[in-house]
Length: 420
Image 1 (tube, rainbow, N blue to C red):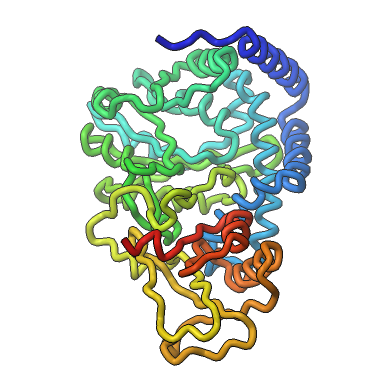
Image 2 (cartoon, rainbow, N blue to C red; image 1 turned 60 degrees about the vertical axis):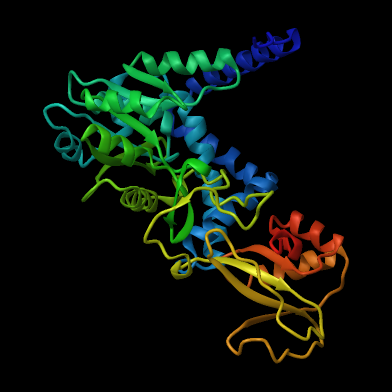
């Protein structure tokens, strides 16, 4: 039996709820453009002071757009992501209570025919969503664009505060949106779609061990198989939805059809197409390609048959941190999947070893052996490519190296981690 919440916890919930209501009422007095501009300003401040979140956003964008954008362009995009996220979040406080007329004035609909074509006489449709744009406005708009007589559902993750959770759920239910708890049986979800329902599925987050390891922005990662699974079980079609800002307080909702069989790989390719509609509108603050802290060599999930990790365009950069005078090549770690790309780091003044491959990428560390000196060397090496460094391998890692890697968000691998 679950222990009831303490008095302190209940008071905290009530205080949070009261603050939320005050903020919602205050923002509700503003026009949508004013609310968006206010949010953009707050987001810009957040981008300056939320250093940890900024590191996550920057790393995500470096992985997603390596080979397409320079580091300077990515830094500019990081700033815009914070402004756009703030604008969308604050504006969502207004759009949650807009009537249908004003909601349709704020949101343009593009490719509406895709939705009609996606339904057949019996089966419904699976809608792939990303945390993009004003997704509260999307939650309000989605049921209103579905053909009459069709049920509309969404997979919903409960908020930790039950008072806030009930308010959000009530707001969505009043427009006819049926909510399914995260973790709901796929059989129940498939039955809903098979009976003709339209189900929205957030598809841009990690799926961890339940996921399929596939290229996503050309980097292998765990991807959710749920849209593909539901579509195949229900005999339904898949479409994706983008929500792009076109002006402060105005968005364009666009429908994207899926071509061919609804495999997870094709679904993720479509999702990537959606995100490229407006990368600045994506909520990049989730560490999408996060390292496994306990097993940094391992990407959680099941590698899909036919995917060659060595052929990945964005293999995981792995620094081999070595000392001078090493007589032979150390045994190198193997990733799961095996997508590691090795670069060698030697101290200043060290001779190039004979065993080193002629095409090896070599870096020289010029500072010292303290934590801060190693951190600076890691930063310099990391910044020589748009794609960030993921791992550091050292046969005999020092405590200073371990601390430096932790502070820079890089995984550290030692010989004893894989030589067993």
